[in-house]
Image (tube, rainbow, N blue to C red):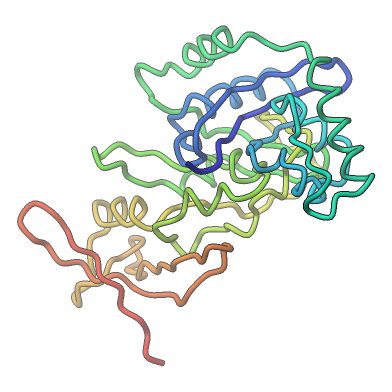
Length: 290
């Protein structure tokens, strides 16, 4: 069936949380997704810790991947019970204490109304007209004093839907996921400009979206683009070279792509040859022989 993810915003001090009970990662990680709308709306109102929490994170054998209380509290916003089988996975007292901590904290949260936040977020971003959250301002990480320039991110990551609409994989799901989600979103390959190595590095951190960048915050390069959707955008905007290879910008630079392994490691980079057949385009990899 595959892992299911929940988009979680939570405030440790007030014990307020919002959990968008999601779907598989690649169903709710885009600029037009309900989960993304809710999270962006909340972060434009105040700062919250954010976790794109997968079901697998709440399995007893995986709790060793989470070392601090902030992360365990994030899991407790959506996991009401950690299945405990002391006969497996080398279960020890530390693992059991983490499981107990999560289940005990689940009922201590004051939960925001899901439908209310969804309605407010759709109105805030004018869903009927835009079908997207705003990519203006800065996504701040107060825990690490780093940031993503949202306009720059969108310009690097912009892709085309099959219907010709512009969209992007949003930075929040990938930066804050608990593991295994990014590979699902990028299963068909990536534009090599992508920074998929950033997956999960902001999981459980205190985030906010603001108009201005604080002086002491460091901007990080951030881009997430799957091969097919990005190639569709580049073909429409820039076309191909004289040799039939896909271009990626107005400077006639060639688009390059790569596949990701099950563990998220890149394969060899390739160019894409474009061939038109009736009403569709066929993309074929072309590897540099050097």
